[in-house]
Length: 103
Image (tube, rainbow, N blue to C red):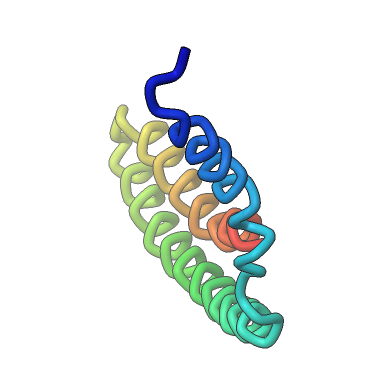
């Protein structure tokens, strides 16, 4: 036996409102979504060019440093080779991962 008969309809109404809130909200207008997509794509293109430029500079500096270690017969040469290669790969492929995040 319910002592407060108004609780059950109130809970039922709140669950109904909770499940239908997304339908009634409707989301952002399509123009705002299109504008945000355009801004993100512009940032992606700039990020892609910047990533390639940084990778090129990183490769040039790394090749000079590795060549210097090679001439000095440094035993730690292979570690620096892998470090510079992976730094360049990160700079090259970061824009593609950035694109996947915002698609």
